[in-house]
Image 1 (tube, helix red, strand yellow):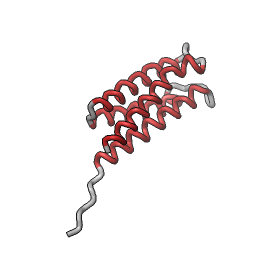
Image 2 (cartoon, rainbow, N blue to C red):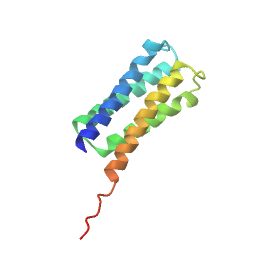
Image 3 (cartoon, rainbow, N blue to C red):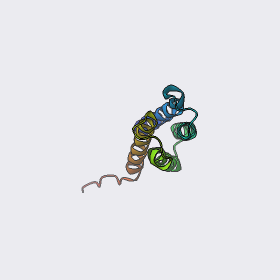
Image 4 (cartoon, rainbow, N blue to C red):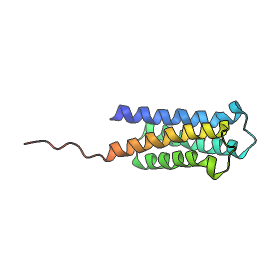
Length: 116
């Protein structure tokens, strides 16, 4: 379980870093989407790396919330439809949300009952 948890948090950190550099790589640095990518990407990286070093359940809840925000941001902040901004946010937000949700489900899943 510990190895899987580390791997999912490292993946979240990688996608957060990709989101963070995407405004420069994809050319939307001067826009609202760029600011959102920098802030949300940095938060996702910081929280995910913190969870790698020292796991706490609250970190997974924050990752889930940040991932959901990243996923919803294109529609909330009115990014241009079909743009690279939308695609990058949906990719990073989708991965972060799914991985964080899976970690939380795994953390709270009851162990199988032993038969006697």
